[in-house]
Amino acid sequence: MILADEKDSIGLAVSVANTWDVLNDPPELLNVERLQILLRWFELDEAAAAATESDLPAIRDVRTRIRRAFEAASVGDAVEELNTLARRAGAVPQLEREDAGWAFRYGVGRRTIAQELGGRSAVALLEVIEQGGWDRFGLCAAAPCCCVYVDRSRNRSRRYCCNLCADRATQAAARRRKRERAA
Image (cartoon, rainbow, N blue to C red):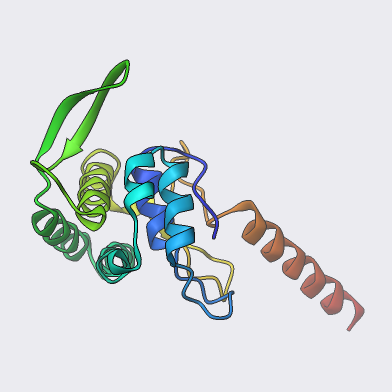
């Protein structure tokens, strides 16, 4: 499981979506231990401590909806998928005091881990579409990888989900060119 470098709600959404990876055997990467690691990475320590096996089906549903937004045929389809996720999560952003600062909460009262992840992810990804456009969503170009990413580069040039895939694709292209020159 590769966690996003960015420790914000966009990074959280990408990390949740990438808990399914065809390069792994089995491709299902989401279990309680990995969920706890993911939650701690994004400083959701209370949710990590409370995570149980019973949370996994709902979080897998959140993952499916996020992935559908990345794989959508149009921006309208992506927005519809994310709006559905936000509605199901009861995502009503509110600013609340947390430790020495402030933090957004997405919903009212006690929430399940899936509602928290779904709300944060849906709102963050909808904001990406609103501010940067749907073309910021990407699927890794290093086949057979199927991970997603949000392109935060200024020139919108990102093609791979991580440096590992970029390196793997570069090496494969170099080997292909070398074989072509030899033939």
